[in-house]
Image 1 (cartoon, each protein chain N blue to C red):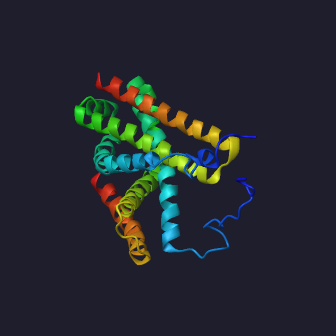
Image 2 (spheres, rainbow over the protein chains, first blue to last red):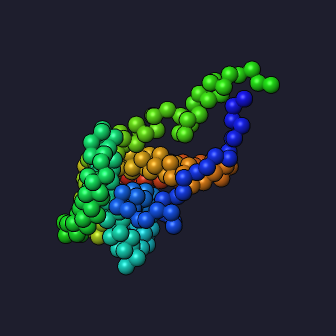
Image 3 (cartoon, rainbow over the protein chains, first blue to last red):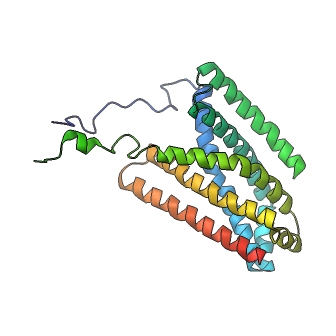
Length: 129
Length: 123
């Protein structure tokens, strides 16, 4: 007699809501997920731009105008920050995967490092490119 | 009455439904992207803003083209697997299956379209 209680087990509450106060560990983690998935917007724009360049000068002109409009600039600026933040989160996760930096204090410090690092790298990217 | 043992019914039905290969795949693609992303940001960032002729010239060279191709393929596979975990966390039932299929379709379509563009630009 297995699974008498199938599908009716208690669940722990979702991390965002009234149950837990916001913490560096949970917030930096959910932000890794948000930034990673949001990067699909910039990816679609880049692929569109590449295909348009391959098709014709007219196609390229309209794609290029969209990517370099104020809206395109905003998407790329936010995406650059998202990219560096997600990369930092990936580095932290790799460290965790290999058994390092697993205590709360270090994880919180690394969360701050990801936020500050992403901001610094975003402005560096804006200068270099 | 089922003749399958409880243990046999449970095999392969851990929280992840499968073994650790999904997570291992995230690790390997993320390490590849640690190298690819900075190179892609620099080369694409410098290509964007050029004229049509400049963009054509840039992507007919091997370095920007190969970096862009690798970044798109590895990045979108990483996205496909990562987004699947997101969907599995927040979406249930038949919706989960269809959303995962949609993410797969989007990822592979973008890979194919991006590679088509890069190949045509290079030739």
